[in-house]
Image (cartoon, rainbow, N blue to C red; front, side, top):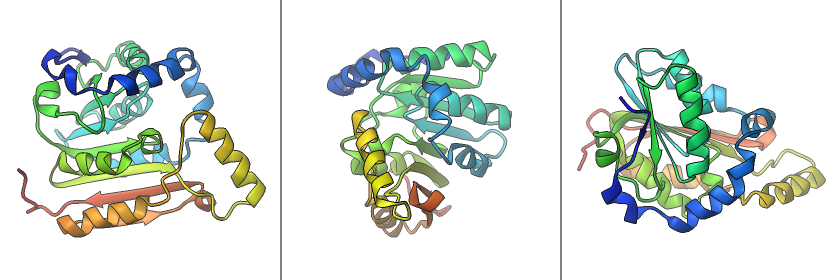
Length: 234
């Protein structure tokens, strides 16, 4: 099974502008991304630990970047299957290398895709997943609200959506908050202050359960939305 898949017919749905922008940003950064981000992308390992996929379950990461989370999750859950999309082909180059280097190409597949428009059927041969995770990506997606709904729509009945991202740092000193937000803006990162409200609206519409926290003094936002078993799929 190839680690990288491309559906040529779906290429027109990809955001060329987003791909160009992300490739420009990460063309060089991807080589040091994992070494630097480990110090401030807090909560990623907790998200992976909370997945707990059953044997044979499918897990999709939206915005898989260098593949760091997928590799970590695949090692932790050897009986699950993993998939990832990212709008940056530069980041996918790093992901493919990392996955292959660790001998996980038979269990992890990644491909180029836009979080707002992707269709997993032609990309991966499946319409939905048991779990979907989004780690520090929503804060870089302009139409992040739509991305949330697309992600929830890719879940199987009983499936769960796991999200961690930057928060408003509401319990941090004002100067620290200001400096952090200025620094994040350099990388086109904007904390989504209305994330809980948007997830709550999705949960209410689907009859889903939602747990939501703001750990690390509000530095991060952490949410898990779980669909009921009987939730209908289109």
